[in-house]
Image 1 (cartoon, one colour):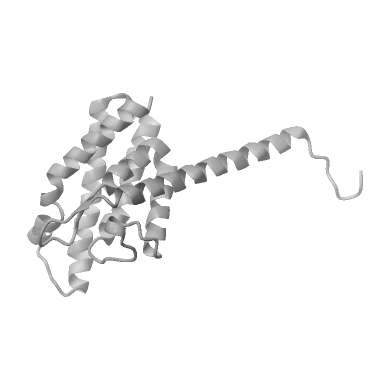
Image 2: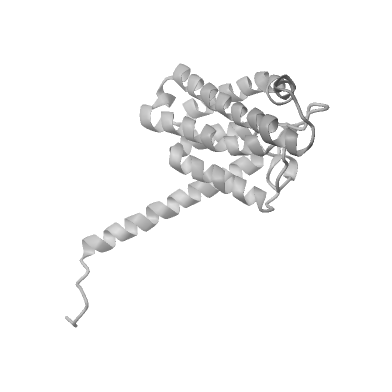
Amino acid sequence: MAAGTQAIDSKSILIFANTDKKLLIDAGLAVGFACLLGILSQLKIYIPGNPVPITGQTLGVMLTGAFLGWKRGSISVLFYIGLGFNGVPWFSGGSAGVNIFTVGFLLGFVPQAAIVGYFVEKFKAHKDSFVLLLVMLLSSVVLYAFGAGWIYLVASPIASEFLSLTQVLKIAVIPFILVAGIKIYLSALIVNLLKK
């Protein structure tokens, strides 16, 4: 053996090969679920006079967390947000970039996916439909806190449209409660059907 070289055993090669394979699979899943978010984002309905649309995004975010877990799910959502902020037109209605009124919701997708992913991954929340519904409800409350909080504390002052907390709730939370419940139910149903 030449000076300065070390023998590489087959076990070391196998460990590196498996690590690379896992990394590729994780990256592929993160990108794939980011694309799913992009597709579901195209489902949108605007409520007249409201800058925040109803979209399929939260359905996709909850599914991303449930199927990828909290780490990969969060990475996937961050990938989706990062590319959207940088010009990929896959936010609601094919938009890209920053809409000051929806940034809080987009940022809130990260903890939403993490919460669902954490409880499914660590506590097998998907094994109990009621627990899964509660976890998804909790994640949605966190999402709406981010979205409404952002509008109240950041967006309305920047836009010089100072809104009271009541006005923000009327714009960013109350019109979406029924639809959020439907998306929570659909997400839980899909997870129960597909994740064993």
